Length: 439
Image: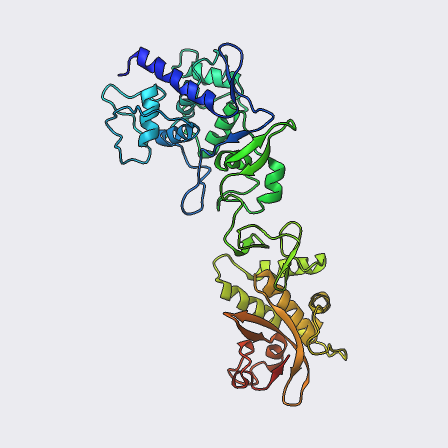
């Protein structure tokens, strides 16, 4: 085992490294606190998600994972590592566990084992964290399931007195319960005086960075504070994120779906705002919109009833097409648009959405709006069709640079009249369309 003298020296070394971090400062004698200067401080990311895009907020923390979290907060890392029976140099946590064991934050057994993959209890987690603050004053706590004779009473009392941890409404602490990743982030943030910039996150991080983390999760902001490195400024009294130093606000270029909403990222991976991309307008909040609240509501309601998460993009487009074909009836109208006219799709869509009846322009308008909400750069085309040209409207979508016709009104009107011929994704080749489509 490590001697008390070695352990104490190592703890002093760790404390010195922590004090060297931007924003750490020594307070009154016997106390260490995190002080964010008015000029700001670098808040390092110390907790990360998984390769599959998840965070697993309810997953349990292992000893190796806590060691890595604490290790990630150190800017200077001495070379001394403890030799441990169950830790190899090839282990991803070798440096973190070895250093904290050498410092006495992790105490090996007499045989040199630390059980790095063992899931930590709430008490064990607090003990490791408190060990990094050896000058923390003694505290008091009065949890009904924690006696003063408990080996972890002192650590929990210190953390409770500092406001890092708290118990449950029934007055218990549950020291032997396993601690989750979300809980761990919350405790460390409190210990370091860190809190997320909610205003910036609400404005910039439209889509949560983890597939299994939603804004309504109790630890949503705690997790983002822990996993998004940033430069923090406290000059306004609350933590303000001046800039981030990772890709948390970057997305793969192209359409992005989140729930029922569509967003779009430019080539730099940033969400476009108050800008038109092709035929799609993305509002100030980054969401695609028809610019008409009533039309937006209709489109969202329709897609919510016909789209499922397991459907492919092609399946969704076909489902929207079939919906338009099967849901409305024809209403002859005398008005028509000149060939090449644009900007009529929302108005015509609302006619059929409100009444359930409409002409080819109405059918095309609805199909156009549904396709756009699905991320397609759909265009509502006013042109002519048939050998004796007559006004007609359809939707056009390009795939690999080739334009295709989606004619929902003609599909509805034919009802098998032309055998197996359909009007879904037709090329402009006359052999595919049966008669000319002219824009």
